[in-house]
Image (cartoon, rainbow, N blue to C red):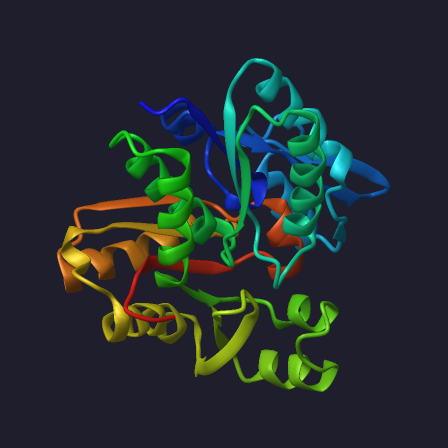
Length: 290
């Protein structure tokens, strides 16, 4: 295998097992709850996701803060000192300043270690969409491709990672300023469920709505039918906000409709879950367009 490390951040929502299997490095992002700061490690060592969502359900609030340049440097520099090159796949710049912090760290470290190769890519992806892109990049790395070849592959394929999302509690979108208080109240009374996707600039965009949860989950799969490329041959990714049964329902619809064999399911981590709330479900796949 090519001797370089693929590094991402914990908003990719990869489990500890998958991180271990892929051989990637993960920078833990942080969140604050009840005046205490937690780091979102893939093994959830500081807070279990179920506990996090239970706290949200019980009225607690969580806030997130941007990762800084020093945090990237602290993780990257020992790898460079050990003689390894690094490819960073960062959380969408449309949702976070994580990528810009990585870019500053990369520029500084290139000057300090001119003999090493270190690159960062704005994935324009989030949650397991970002995780899916990391997974696909590792498949390219395992073919023996160089760091530049994998970087260029990621850049040319990242906009084919489709994100179809629905949330269950509109009040989290209201708190984040994405909908008005009136829309949240009326929508909740009428059981309106938004259908959201991540656009080509990496922003969360509302693209539709349904009445009721079952219709919203089906709508995610309907969207996949419109754009998925050879879905039966894909590994599909699904993330959820402590609603595994709903995620498994979506997975079964995907299997039944498209013949998909391999589906990977994991939590939406606290960094994104703080803004989407309990009950979020997101479906990720390779499509012809977002």
